[in-house]
Image (cartoon, rainbow, N blue to C red; front, side):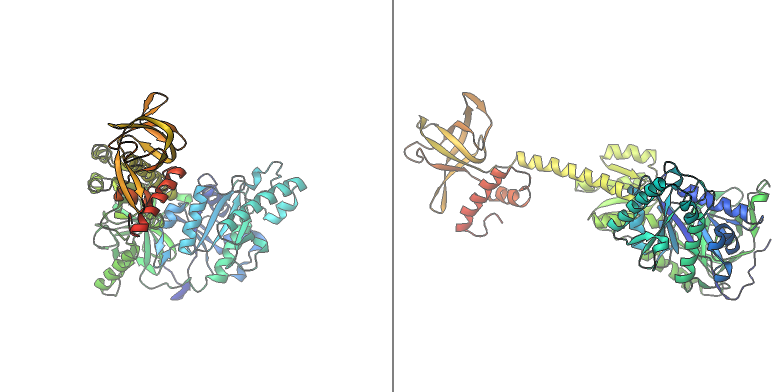
Length: 599
């Protein structure tokens, strides 16, 4: 069977639509609803089920949308929905210069509002500068809702009671407010004048189909108005696409599910595919599409086609595809020099390459796009990366992570990947922490919390080994022993006085060491330290009361310069305010003599 295109050489391709949103907010249900309506409205065969995508032609869009879409107003052939919803697939789907999707639908549950993955999806849309609209889903769950199957939103809105309308308005304006908090100006779609400056919010129900006509109408309108130039392609030109998934297919070996966004791909075409090491150069053995729904019972799930034009999802069977990578480019060579095409693929892969350092954490992700999104998130969090690759966490990743000198960097962050069991065992032995998650920012958060814990532990260890600032005064009439050691009653003004601390007395601008604390007693009991406000008796080895020290003298814990520097520069936020006060006074005294002391 041939799928030959008889359109002009320059033609408008179908806009590619991605669906994003938080888990459970109804991304898949919404896609299913659009697909289901399309199958019901279209004649058998009007809907082409692609690999990883569903094409909904303009006449079917028009039938679903009713009077909202007049086919005579549009030149674009329809919409191509990417079937794997969620931002993993969105970040995977890339073309030259960014996201492969031309436009996106961000699904938000009207009851739940923004959730972690909603914010993450918005982040990705912002970074890739992809235009999007918000589908405020589950309007049918507003208490008292009166459903009107498949109706446009204004029609069904009018059919609701005042209370239901008021409750829905409140929920919708909550979402509009949350978009504003994220830096996006938004309003209900029928109030938006300029969709390039404002995000349209479309109330929908994936269950009843209410609002789905509006959603399709807005998608078609936006694409026609703002993207017509981008949709112009040379249909007969060599195909350009992106690998969506690398899969083993019975009877065909390793295949690549590809979204084609420019030109045409044919059986026997030579193609260059981005891979883990060098680009793969191979010949197309077969192009496979799913069989039409009517024929799904036949032996083979796929049928072979001779050629496919953009935009389309197609399974490519060819030799040597084992190392192909999800998110990598696919280019047809045709009548060009193969080395030139290899260079183009290399250049495209270099655009996605992650900057690595001499030291840092190991990052693994399921696709090139999500690897790039991870690298962006880690850069924002100022976390260096030593190695970044697509694939599951393997023993060699543990080997790399285990060589880090800094315990904070003995870590592997895996996004949407598995940890191989031998890697898990090795990580335990090598004392390497492995973090995995399906939400990028939760993964980064988990790691930064781990780092904070290590730092807290390190700081308390340092604090235990560092001399603490203290300022104290010998009380009048409180000499219990004059020397060997001198035992006196003191009041601690600020800081922490500890056993075995050297003690100084300032004479003018010079500190003079007078002895060492050899014991602290509070109400007859031995204690290790005295804090600000405490009155205790202290044994000081070295001085004689009446000679080196006097009742009424103010004494200080002697701080080595290195300790003073660490306290001021690294631990100032870890010590009590009174201790910081004692430190600052001590530094001030020293710096009168030497302005750079302790710096």
